Image (cartoon, rainbow, N blue to C red; front, side):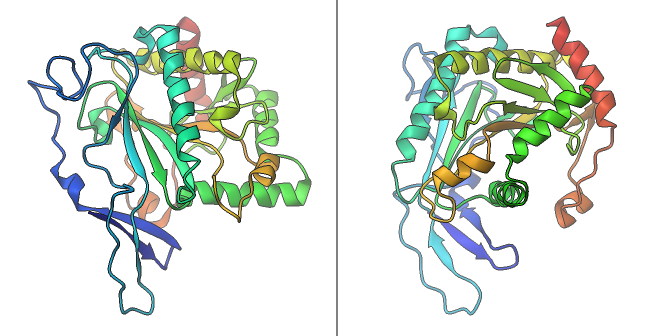
Amino acid sequence: MSELRYNPLLDTYTIVAGNRQNRPNMPKDWCPFCPGIGKKVPDNYDVLVYPNDFPALSFDNEDVEILDSAVYYKKKAIGACEVILYSSNHTANLYNLSDQNVLKLVKTWIDRFNYYKNFSEVKYIFSFENRGKEVGVTMPHPHGQLYAYPFIPQKIETELFNAKKYFEQHQINLFDVMLQEELDFKQRVIVETETFVVYLPFFTDYPYGIFITSKKDKLYISDFDDKEQLELAVLLKKVVRMFDNLFSKPFPFMMCIHQGVVNDEQYPENEQRKYYRFHIEFYPPLRDENTIKYYASSEMGAWAAANTKLVEMTAIELRATFQKG
């Protein structure tokens, strides 16, 4: 059973999910996602949605007790957690897969978004990937995840709040302004395509923390047409290859898809479209080939982010690596 516990200092929730303590840790001789070993997967597949065996959020979670407290309360941890498998090949990388395979992954993200947005309890649908033991991955099989939250996660709400504030002050989408700044300056841009810009933001707190931002007014991943979906699929393959080529080894990262919220009266869809924008944020925990960039006391305890490398210099590394292919 999971529950949401309210944090009055930050005005958000902590998901308390004791069942996740029982997750298996990096098995060496078996994999539940491999055909012939895993009991819940078909003999062969390309992209497969797999129900998380240890979900932090579930529509089946029971009601929680009412607390006799002036500041604390609990809520039912309603929602969903899914694993999205990229391939039946245990050792595949995203860039080893065909364009059509990765396109199917993008379409799966869209399909699951369209499914969960119909649940009034769901406020935010978050697709992401954790890659590498450096970020706590317990299953090495190529996969990502999707969470359907019953609240707006704090980082997303902070982005929404500030993007909305900027629009109210200047009557222009903040993402358009940021992109124009990056495209004019050029030095932090890795690559520009018809629909997307890959760049290291001026403010990024991870040395290699790139953004992939839509140049077009797209709020949700479901807004992209077939051509744009394929463009995104191919771009993701190239970005992951760039990371792996940077130090000639598998590159760990957290890949987080940021898009608009759903089913929330405070953030109507038509208003969000004026000031927010679909983008993907990467959090790679390396600051050089063999050194981890940790989020330590200042970053975690005070939210005072610190980047140990000059963004314009790491952009040169990434751009050169991307261009080599």
